[in-house]
Length: 186
Image 1: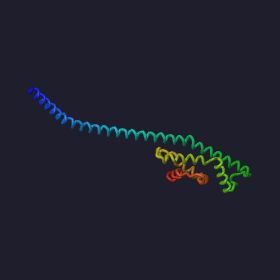
Image 2 (image 1 turned 180 degrees about the horizontal axis):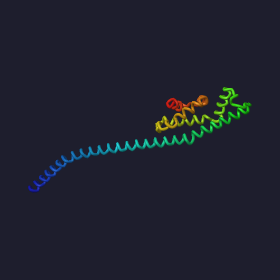
Image 3 (image 1 turned 90 degrees about the vertical axis):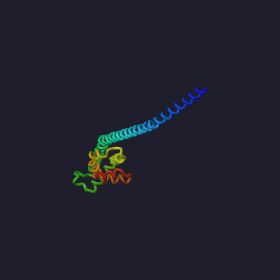
Image 4 (image 1 turned 30 degrees about the vertical axis):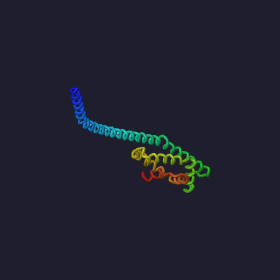
C-alpha cells in the first residue's frame, strides 16, 4: 500500500511537473501564434484595402468611359439637332416676315428670333444633360481630368455661344453643378 501511495504521489509530481513544463512552453507558443496571427490579419487587411482601391479606380474608369460615351452618343447629336431646328425656325420666321437677306434683319430682331428658335428647339434639354453630367463629375465617381481634357472647351464655348438661352433657362431651373463646372473649366 505504501508503495502504491508513493507511486501515486510520484505520478502526480511527474504530471504536475509536465504541466508546468508544458505551461512554460505553451505561453511563449501562444504569444508567438498571436503575433503571427496579427501580422497575417494586417497583411490580409492591407491586401483587402489595395483590392478595394483597385475596384474603386476600375469603377471610376468605367464611369468616366460611360460619361464620355454619353457625351459622344447623346449630348453632341442633341446639340446638332437643336441647332438645326433653331436655324430652320429662324430662316422660316425671316421668310415669313419678308426678309430676303440676313444682312437686312435688325440685330435685335435676329437675336429675338434666335432665342425663340432655341426655346422651340428645346435647348434646355442640352443644359439639363450638361447639368446631370456636371453632377456626376462632382460626385467623384469619375476621373474629371480625362473629361476636362476632351470636353471642357466644347462645354464652355457652347454655353458662352448660347448664353442668352442659358440665362433664360436658368429662370425656371437652377443649374448649380453646370455653373460650378463652367466656373472651374472656364
